[in-house]
Length: 127
Image: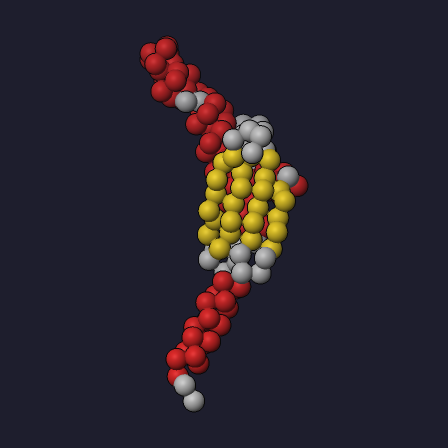
C-alpha cells in the first residue's frame, strides 16, 4: 500500500470536512453585514471631517449630535435590520462555502462565506 495517496486522500477529506463545518449560515451573514451597515451609515451620514471642514466647531458638534441620534432613539432593532438583510439577499449554500448578494439602501454587497469568515465586497451601481 502506498502511503502518499492515502495521506492525500485523508488531507483532502480533512480540508473538505473543515470547509463543510465552518460554512457560515445566512443568519451569521446577516449579523455580520448589519454591524457593517450600521457603522457605514453613521460614517456616511455623520462624517465628522465633512462637517468640520466647512463648519468648523459647529460642524463637529453637529457630527456628534448626528452620531448620538443614530446610536439611540428611534431606529430599527438589530433583529429588524438582519431580517431586512435576509429578505434582500440571494443566498447560495454550496456546502463548502456560501455566496451572498445583497441590495440595501446603503449599498449593494457581494460576499463569500468560508471558514466562519466573510469576504465582503461593496458593488458599484449597476454591477
